Image 1 (cartoon, rainbow, N blue to C red):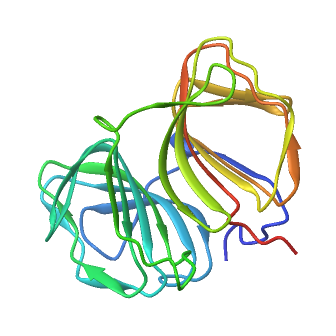
Image 2 (tube, rainbow, N blue to C red; image 1 turned 60 degrees about the horizontal axis):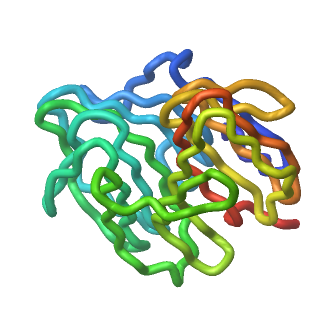
Length: 217
């Protein structure tokens, strides 16, 4: 098990992690949280070398992906950097990459009723007005869970707030900050239910953020 105590705050600067081999040749991983060796709740940064592939596999409780670099592919199509993907519980595929890619992937974390299949190309989806100077690109919502990209303009400060059901962030560009530290691009943060912080930025910053999905006990 790795980082499976959801009552604790976790911060990982993923660019400083070593790449570890996966069961597939040419596919490498930086683990963030893991319930078991090759099954269960898992979040990782995954790198496909050019012309590498992963064997056909199923997603008992779904798969969520954000393509960070290159082009990720499967039987249904090609997904360039900036694509958000949700494959629902019970789905399966055989992913590969011809030119190579890096993805953020979360496995087996869906509610069984969350059956929506999602494909969003953030390169062409609209940004919507958010609170203050923020702009938001909604990616998915189910009950209390919400996933979005959030763009912070230079110098933006948000109000102190709590996270019902927790908050998870991957910093895509720029540098995200709060009273606890500074988090450059590639940083992954997971904050527990009812945690609180006062976030801000000093340069334009884009984050992938999910809220409301962690245990509330």
